[in-house]
Amino acid sequence: MRRRNKESQGPKPQKIGNRWAAPAMVISAVIGLAWIVVFYTISSTDITIPWYSDLGQWNLAIGMGFIVAAFGFAMKWE
Image (cartoon, rainbow, N blue to C red):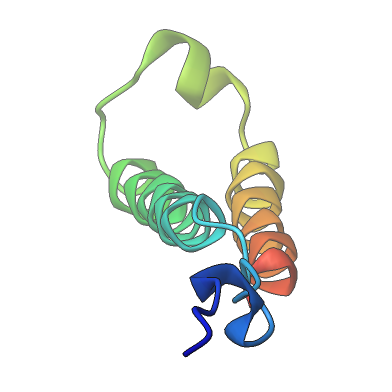
């Protein structure tokens, strides 16, 4: 009777995907959405956040940048 090595019974499973891509995608999307929501919420009130309010309409570009980064992370997720 011949003994077989367990390692030679077939191909080894391959690691698929990046474990960090999905959490990074979700976090980036939530930050972008929250950035835009806060901008629209405080723009109609007298509330001012010193560095945030000074950015003006650039807050939309920053929020959309986070959302675009989320799509970039989605491309890494397999």
